[in-house]
Image 1: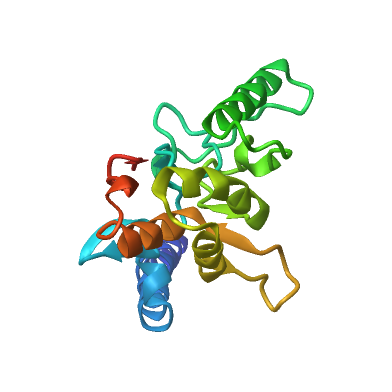
Image 2: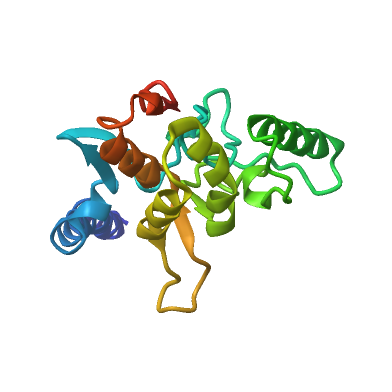
Length: 206
């Protein structure tokens, strides 16, 4: 009996050290060496200051910036500590109300835009944190931003192309636009020359 207990305790200690110490330290070390940017949260820095992560969306509502897709995290949008979906099914009347309200807000922000609203601008992602929108969703917002900022449509379309991530290996997934990076590029390039573009920090809620 005592021999069995000693064997069990020894096995427990060996496994505890391997799985609780050696394995995590090894994986952390490999991550820091091979993928340091991803391992440290894919942080985005602006002028030496961390302003966000390329993996987590942010809340933008000034008309001169691109808007992210809705976030389902509550009470704060894009709360990285509370990733979740709305869990509202397609037949849920609450979802229909939310979508209708979002479409109304988008139309009010740009009454001249008569085209259909891209679905990712009125529905949240499964995580509630998605920083990306479709190219169609980005292009839909160009007229509003051009009018509010005085920046040409051609320039805004060029910025969208610069911040578009193509499908993995050219065919896995769809092209997406990272809104956080896009708005930071917009801010960096044009704030000094166009006072109308306003403050990015006022339009963003982390």
